[in-house]
Image (tube, rainbow, N blue to C red; front, side, top):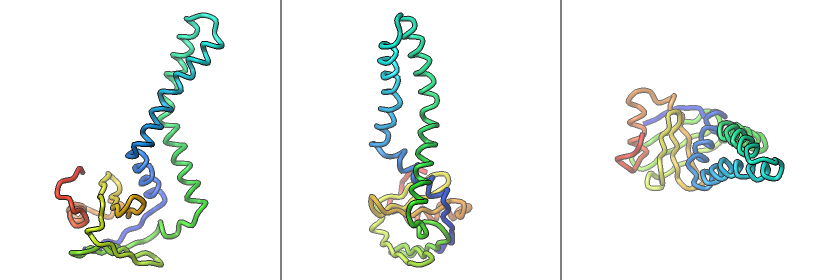
Length: 170
């Protein structure tokens, strides 16, 4: 099986956001920030307000606004941080046209300036999202394949070819 595809900056950002959303450490930090701030609001309001009613009203309003705004704001800030990291380093190998060839034993990825061959036995995990498929060979190494290049049965065939696991979540 041979597939030609292109990885864009948006694909890479989605990959990073998916990675973070699956990270137990990131999930813990999100919960701590999301629910810890209203407790901080309560403490500040207790120091500044004179009546219990004022404290309850102010804290309720601040906490509600925070709980509504925080998830979207956090995602936006994280996305911006990923974009800044991309700008800082040399990302020429991350983006652009690629070709992947899958045979019985291995996956070969052709880039502008390099070729990588990965044995299927080295694949640790395959994550399938709506818009990308991620093939992990280690904790730090992954290959991104946008699903827009995999039409119809090609997507199922591709997943079957790269996955050592017969049953997986789509």
